[in-house]
Image 1 (spheres, helix red, strand yellow):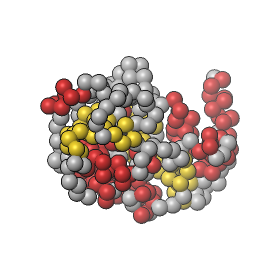
Image 2 (image 1 turned 90 degrees about the vertical axis):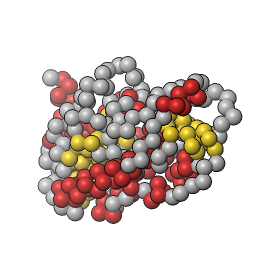
Image 3 (image 1 turned 60 degrees about the vertical axis):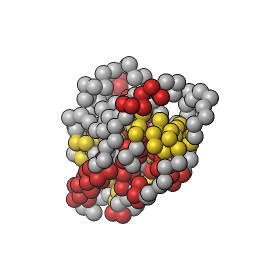
Image 4 (image 1 turned 120 degrees about the vertical axis):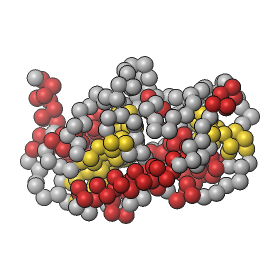
Amino acid sequence: MLGNYLQKRKFRHIEHAGADYDGVINIHRFNTNNVGDRASAPYLYFSELRRKRIDILGFKEEFDYHDWTSEIAQNNVVVGGGGFLERKGFKHSIDFFLHLAEKGRKVVFWGIGHNDPRMGSYDYYSHKYSHDVSGIKLFGTRDINKHEWVPCASCMSNNLDRKYETKQEIGIVKHHSFNNLPESSYPVIYNDSSFEDVIKFIGESEYVVTDSYHAMYWSILMQKKVLVVPNSTKMFNLKFPVPHTDFQSFKSHLSKTVVYNEALDICRDRNIEFAGKVFDYLGL
């Protein structure tokens, strides 16, 4: 009972919000060094969505929580992409978007997925999220489960169409937040680099070893031989699974790699199909 009371007080200003919406707001993680988060928003690739954006954690950086929710509340919302589910840091934001949907706002989740660093804390093969997302009419998730599969919209980037000469057998794309890479003679790039530089590095590698979700994703789309070092549940329930390894013993797993020749076309087709639904739903 107390929890419900506090929840109502937290969003009490939404109860009296006007019925006329100003338009569409895009929500993703862009105040970050992580290139995957910065590149994953659908509005970057679909001109119909090129409207205002707000960082999903903006209440920690730009607004207090009340101002952040008030800024968003008068709009319909497109959330994505990114690993926003099962992640403690995003819980307040996801709770708010679900509340908006309950109050009649049109909320779209596009290419989001689970991302719990405590990989043994729950059964991520159960195809269930701890949040009840049934109130979201257009829920597109990058995870393979009972919901509609919609991969990250960054597959639409023209950067992925560029052709590169292979210059290195093995390239390591490292998540900038984790210090689990032993001394190595292999070429390394970090995921706080530019999108163009990361794509070029992947393009020039025959094998890619990474603990970055988006480096893994882009490598698959570029038909590379990929090994992933899991750091959260986001590396599971993939449409195009790749072998798991660690940075100490990955060489013994190179023979297990798989190339998915049609992955880029499949992911683009799904995003284009979902975009059509979104534009119809939002009246764009």
